[in-house]
Length: 105
Image (cartoon, rainbow, N blue to C red; front, side):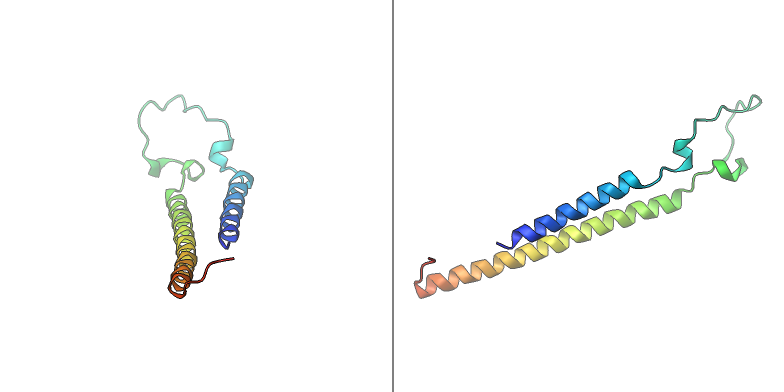
C-alpha cells in the first residue's frame, strides 16, 4: 500500500518543523527581563519615540507566519492530491477486475 510513505513523509516534516521551532533562538525581547518604565514616564509613549532597540518589527514576523501557514497548507493539499490519485487507480483496478470477473488472490 502506498499510503505509508506519504504518512511517513508528513511525520518527518512535522518533526522537522517542531525541531526548528525548539532550536530557533528566542528573540531578544523575550529573553531579557522586562524593563521598568523610567521614573518620569507616566503616560503613553508612541512607538515612534521609542529607541530602536525597544521596537518590535511586526512585518517580518507576520510575513513569516503567513509563509509557514501557506507552505503547510500547500503540502497538505499536495498530500491529499497524491493519496486521491492512488485511490482512483485502485478503484479503476477494482472496476476492471469486476468487469473481467477475476478475483484477487
